[in-house]
Image 1 (cartoon, rainbow, N blue to C red):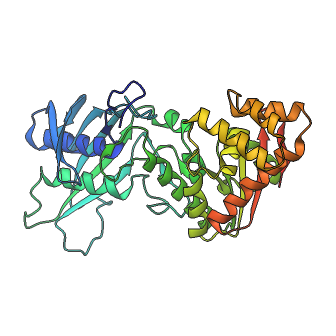
Image 2 (cartoon, one colour):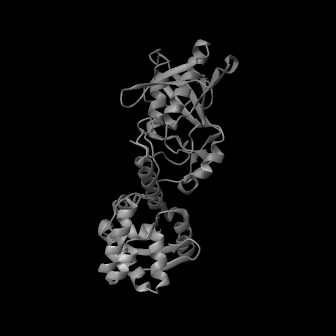
Image 3 (tube, rainbow, N blue to C red):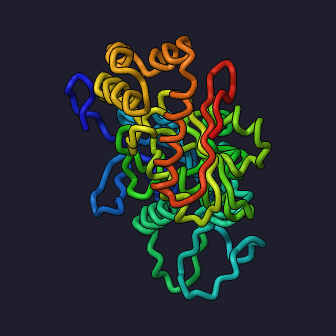
Length: 373
């Protein structure tokens, strides 16, 4: 992937990969008594990557150790970039009360716990059940594989290791995420299927859309609010009064969210967006990220001419700098019927993509919902 200046964007590591590296470092310290300065762990792809150990400590008296790494998310604008991801490991004795009752025959038992800054799942519909630490299946597998490289599980007796994952300032960082809406309380989620963060990751968005919809369905909801941003979401939520679980932030992933709505079995979509995004939906642009702006302005002018705008006015609009300027020009000219016609086109696109009934809400940043079709 390239930046706007033509330079390559740098990939980074997920919180799950960092948690696995910290777990391996802590266990290595506990078993060897030597503080590691670097650990190397396997990734799901078969590749291996090394992590510098940021901090470590040892308590032989309690059979426990701690280690942490600093997350490097590469060039992705990740809220956890630079965060300290830690792991405390504790060898559980056979007579300790919390030793799991496991009849699987597996000689290595790993008990994962949520430490400071790591959330706990409280609602159904996510990848892990309520009551569990918000550590997704991918990271759980990476943590286990990293630990298995340190400890020999073929000892002929049961070994239980308690692993507590933490994120420094994680509870504060989680306020910048959608975790509270998903029913994850107390901190961040430990995420990552591949261990690698791809810059400006589409998968991070689509995973969040899927998780939000799963939570909504598990809450018994059959209609949702799809919004392109917090402003449009807030105004439509105030209008409808639907539960918090009904709100699904889709960002620029319009077509994906529409198709996902049908796949999850919803019966009605409330689509909320501001003018620029609604206009792109009317133009049947499936991914509404800001790019090809000049082209889209010309396309918008051509669309408005088809909807009844005079040729001279359409030519004038084609020279606009932004979609917002087009809206202001239409509104100042009193051409509200064309604004509504654009909303109708966007609604039709949403219906065609989802196959579901759609109500569309055009939101103005300061005036709230200005059109509903």
